[in-house]
Length: 436
Image 1 (tube, rainbow, N blue to C red):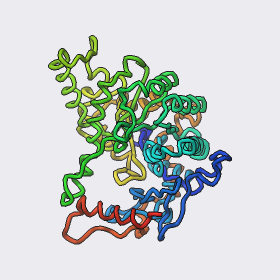
Image 2 (tube, rainbow, N blue to C red; image 1 turned 90 degrees about the vertical axis):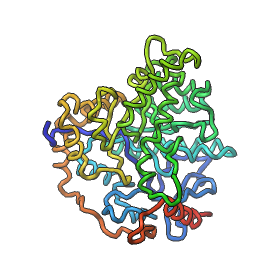
Image 3 (spheres, one colour; image 1 turned 135 degrees about the vertical axis):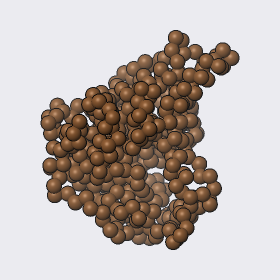
Image 4 (cartoon, rainbow, N blue to C red; image 1 turned 60 degrees about the vertical axis):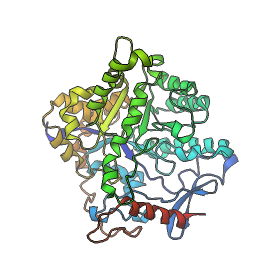
């Protein structure tokens, strides 16, 4: 397959919510209590119910030269416009040859964690969740028909209320929700608890995928303050393996065989061994642990129900038969530091050159289109969705590195690796400066 004929749909990107995102969507009774951006000591900070979120522009580094990473954006003027402006985002997608995108939240947390914290203000928290969902669908996704797969948030504290919101958004064409890979780590019921049954049923009945982004539950640990930060970054995608095992052994698959979930930004190279180990565990231990997969195996559950994705993963792509090519998808991760913009097609093309055209189409776009009920061809025409066709629309878009965009003071020292301790200090200083 020629590079210009590729069609790419990214199942993991991120939006930086613009100023005023919640203003027109918050119900009248809560006007004035909607999340808003304020200036605090030279930083743009989101505030909700008296709490500031801290480092507002964290990791929105797309477009910077890599030697300026680590000097994090502190405000909108320090970020590439495509991070928060929908029209500029579409232009950046065109320049990268990317047709479609799922955009996870930033201020609310990738799974809306921040909205779950206000036990004393559940009603206004739910209003903020709905306001976010309406902004994301109406003002972000619907501003560019055919270019986005919408993703909604739900309240974790009430399974029935969450199911009602899933059904509301599904009627509007939203077939994905974001949820922590392990809500129990946030003080909510385990995915094994009946609490979530209304959510699983609502998702299964409405073809809604449960997207679990890395870092929303289980997190990679920092080995020590002296450890180079590279070690932590290396382990981030693999950290979700613990939760993947938890989901394999969870009860919802038997109750709701149509249910699907996604390990967002989890990569794929580690999966063959996880599945081998899962099947080994079942063979050796199920007689005393009392688990029962019937005539199947744990690996069958994974391949039937769990969607995976990768940014760059040559090893995983060489081992597709052991992973299951029908559930593997691709991601760009714009605007985070791992993203491959603006050269995603070149990297994808080089890493998939050993695959058949049919396999390339599956992992490049067809699997994502099927699983997320997404059909951009009906809106845009397939001939307008290729890398070549999209890039032809973006000849005016500069993809050159933008130097000196500003932000936090760099933590680097000549000749010394940046450590976990350095990053902890940077975050702590930022949190202290943005405290209300």
